[in-house]
Each structure stands twice: as structure tokens, then as C-alpha cells.
Image (cartoon, rainbow, N blue to C red):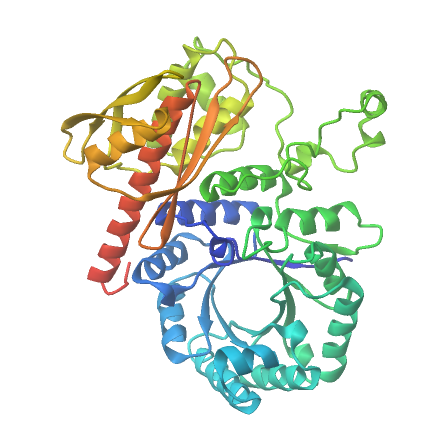
Length: 518
């Protein structure tokens, strides 16, 4: 009988550490619920000590998620551990994850301590965390560059102190598969009490080897893997959840392991993270990329038409990728058909989200004769990413521009009190003019750090999706909107990002007022 591999998802923690990614509290909860539907065993909900807002977000997730372990990260210091416990204490199954640097370069230059001081601190803080819960994970950070004798000692001492999971991270993506195999065999051989814990691996993709390293780790004793959806994470990212899960499922002939992941939720989860993070999945990304199940070669197409398995080692339906449109959607489609199509695509929307999405669908139906799954997914993703009670709402946008004309934009917005405010501005181009008018009306001037457009479908009536990032006080907020008119989509994306920024600030203010409690 195959052994289970536990899936520890750190999208909400390490994934959010990607440069330019910042999830709103509402998005974090939606992601956590989707990870629960996906069947993730452990959800690392965040770093509770980072801010009152992050603490409150972790508390909210801990209260809502019932079928997955909820984990909070903490440095090996009491204040961090206290915050982590405050964040997860009401979870159905709470876990505290304690870490400390262990490589010589990081001990000397970052911690400025001696190895013995690090050893004593790690042991003491794991013991302290174990007073709150028996579910304690310990990570010696930068383990693959740590001196082996020291690594074996600190792992052994932390197990004695109460750690039930030992996660050994390749924090800078330094390892190669052969080395990783020997690395874990060495831990199993030289740590006398290793059998008292679950051995885990957390890999980064700096050399493009993290999935290969993770599979090798599993083959050499690891039974928990730390991953993120779409591989989002610091620098080049983390190991992709979908790649490890589907490798184990597809190659059962040599990998006698299984997970409890509902693979039919993979595609939807990927699209959710893509929308909320603003990080587009590359077309040739394994498992969830746009080209993963598309065939351009005539030889490949001929083989696929005769038998799918000739050129596909996985069935796209197993990953939840929609196979064609069962209902032809258009402006005459009613609410019942729309809801059925949403369900078919695998989305669970609240009544408010359904109503907003249906209104957007009907509006699009007046502009396009046929609306396919990609159009619907864009509409739904936008509604999921929107704040529930937006402070600013776009009412009207009109733009005039040309190669011999000064770009001018007139905007009309509803303010937080429901008043209509209107203003105009000129700019170097139509988008610049719109955003200047937006700043004049709202009196909020964040820095625009990214502006990106892509077409969802083919043809002149295709929707354009605009993704932007704005930054204020060192924090980044993503806005996303779709429309057949890219200027309208650009205005709505900016409003969406602005509302997320305001919503995050309210969340943090409420958290501070409540002392970080939900």
C-alpha cells in the first residue's frame, strides 16, 4: 500500500513574500477556503507577528478552516511564538512553525551569534512553543548550506524539546537532486530520534530544480512537502504544488506514494492565485500553463485526434481544466443558466458575488455574441478579487486622444458616501490622463508600479484584462479588471486596486483597535 505524502501549502506566507505580491484579508480567506477544498493537509496562514492586520487575517482563517491544519510562522523568539499562538489558537488543528538560521554565513552575518547560542535558542523556543500545542514544526533555515554535524545536533535537540515535524529547507535553491538524496539519507542515519517526527522538505527554485529536488527528497524519507500554488514565492519561487502532486499521481509505477489532494480543484486554485497575486502563469508552465494541453504540431494533432494518450500523459479533466463549452452563453442566457455555468466551472460564489458577476456578464453579452469559458473566468475572478463594500465606484469614463491631440480623460466616481464626483485631466496618453483624473477626484496618490494588458480570447471583440500594481508606504496592491474596451478596464482596475488599499488599511486599523484580535 502506498504511503501518504502530506501537502503543506505556504502560498499565503512564502507566496506572499514574492516581490510585488500583497493579498488583501478578504483574498487570504478566499484562498484558504479554496486550499481547504483542494485537500491541502496544512495551510501556513501567515506570519502573525508581522503586523496587527496579518495577525487578524490568520485568526480569521483559523476560525473558518476546519478540514486542514492551520499553521502560523514564528522566529525562534518568544514574542513571535506568542503572536503565532494568538493567531491560530482557535483553529481545529493549530500548528506553530518555529525557524532559525543555521548556516555559518547566516549565523555570522545575519544573526551575529555563535552556533552554540543558536542551538540553545532553538531548543528553548521549540520547548516554549510546545507549551501551547503538541503540533510544533521546526525549520533550520538554509539547511542545505549548514555544516552537517551542527545540523544533526540542532535537529536532535529540537525533537527532544517537542518538535513533531522537522522541516529541512533548501532556502536559497542551492541543492541538486543527487545531493538532496544524500542529504536526507545522512539526516536519517545520523539523527538518533528522527523516527519520532515527520520529516519535511521546503525547496526554492533558484536553479530551476525544486520539483526534482522535492521528488528526490520524498524518495529518501521525506513525508511532508512544503509547496505553493503556481510556484509563487521569494525570488524564483517555491516548489509548485501542482507539479509534485501530478508527478506522484502520474508516475505511480516508480513513486509508490499518494496525496489527499482533489486534483480536479487544481486549475481553479491556480487561476485564483493568478488573479489575486497579479502574477501571470507562463504559457509553458507545467500542469496549469495555457499551452500544457494545446498542440500546434500537425503530427501531435493527428495523434491526439486518434488517441489522446499519444501525446498527453495526463487527462486535463483530472486537473479540472474545462473541456469545451457545454452551454453556449450569450446575452439571452438567464440567471439560472449563468449560475449553472459558474457551478460547472467549479466556482463557489456568494449571492452578492453572483449578482455582481451576472450583471457584468449581461453587460458583456451586449458587446459579444458568444461568451466562452475564458470570458466567464475573467468575470468571476474579477468579482472574487473585489472588496465587498468598495469605497470608490466608477460611474463613467470618457477619453479623447490621438497622435495629434492631447490625451484628455473625464471621470465620474461615486465616493465612499455615495456622492458623485467628476473631474478631468490631461496626460501623455489616455491611461495617464485617466489615472491623473482618478487621483484628482480621490485625493489619493499611490505610485503606479506596473500596468499590463492581455487579451482573454481571440478576435476583435475579445475582452482585455488589465492588471495594475500600485504602491503606497512600501506596500503593493493589485487591481484587475476586464472589458472589451481596454480603457474602461484600465479605469476599473485602478479603482479596484484603490479599494483594496483602502480595505487593507481599514483592516489594519480595526486590528490595532482590537489589539490584534478578531
